[in-house]
Image 1 (cartoon, rainbow, N blue to C red):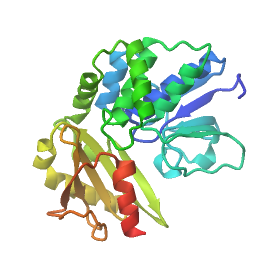
Image 2: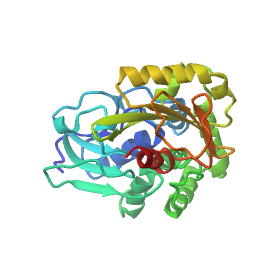
Image 3: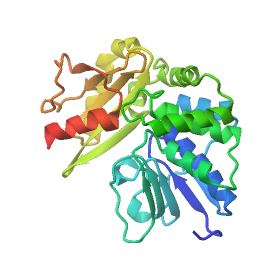
Image 4: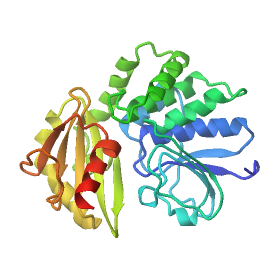
Length: 307
């Protein structure tokens, strides 16, 4: 990498704690190596991520939604449909992610994909393996928070033993004695729906997925109980159908994940009739026990049904 040229570290649209904290931590690592690196976001931070940055005294990334012709590093995503930039317009020099590969480049670049529960785990391993970089409490804290967030406090089916081990090491540096309790506090910050519009709830952590020439969308929100979402079920389903029509999706699903009872209530737009959930759908809604991960539990089930 050219040490005199600025590199922008970019996460996906609807930035979550893993994308934001991974970008910040990796930028600090690159700065240590003499590289000018700027972590960026496009959009508002969710309450959980804001809480994490404030708790550990870390500045928010630069908010910029146009990075055309600039050098970028992608973290926590590598599919064009999930970013706020057209990857063909940017000079992507590196990818660090834990999702399936959906990116190609005509140039040789650094490309690291690991089957871990979070991108933060990959970043943390890099930092631990460095002989010269010292992980500070703030950096350890935000990386720990990102791992806890993306693995749903180690309850998601995406969690690996490496995620747990890295989190344990980070917790020592971050001075977090009770990791489980801290994780629940994070989720409480993210789970209140009272002040959010239906669109904000659906789009807070939203990803689109391509299937042939079409696409569908899935929003996910994690809660400590389902009562608030159930009270607003009709409103949320109505908004799902609006998003479906407005953005020309095959269908849109909101995955309301109960992190305490370990299951998800799926709220469905029109167009989901061909999907087999192996449970009875009632009033555009179905509860699936044990479903915690959009990536590993829900998306494969959808792809299998509609392929």
